[in-house]
Image 1 (cartoon, helix red, strand yellow):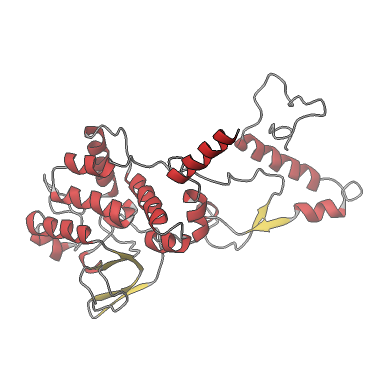
Image 2 (cartoon, rainbow, N blue to C red):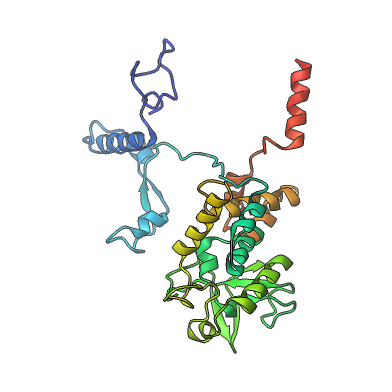
Length: 311
């Protein structure tokens, strides 16, 4: 598998399939499946018991496995293939420039849109989480009745029945006790987030929407005024603002990348703090995506300059 994927050179130093492109990951995965089926299909007299044990591995089902038709949540294990290529070890997030926030805020025209940009940057929200917020999820005063956080915070709750079909990624249990939300994923709120929220609620939010569906983000114009804002609508707004600001085609999730990087920098690289601040399930995910060295960091630059001067 290493040879056909050009990870290992042949004895004379030349890659396999000279003059042709090496197999990509998709082709390598297909090749691995064929090889495993070939070896397991051998008769007992030609098959090694040790090889059989090495190939007979299992793994936990992934989200894609569970979503496939006729599979559902019935299986607790899936066959694994040790010959298949491993996934990439580290991902590098696409982030907005340092002045992206200010440039976006100058180009949005409503209090609602200013709130969306601010909450994406200061709260690290996924767009599905933000569009799925209800007014009852917001505990923006200190020592709220839920008694689950002393500072201002929100509860991100998974609801399957949102009118705009927005849903949170997290599946933390939550409940409504005497009209107060308890549980869910708790996320802290900055003073600027609270400021933009009150500006939006006091100038643009239709009163009828609170009693109708009670969702935070609504459409402001047209026949659908007052109806919940969809994730597609929020993404379109963000993309249009990015184009007007000269940032190109931008996405709300890029602001989440900026948030995570800023928290890591401010906490001295503490993965646990970044995990809880952004609502990731594992600190390993934070490390995989954001734990690499910033090539623009002054210490990184100073280290390289020292190496260059020594040589």
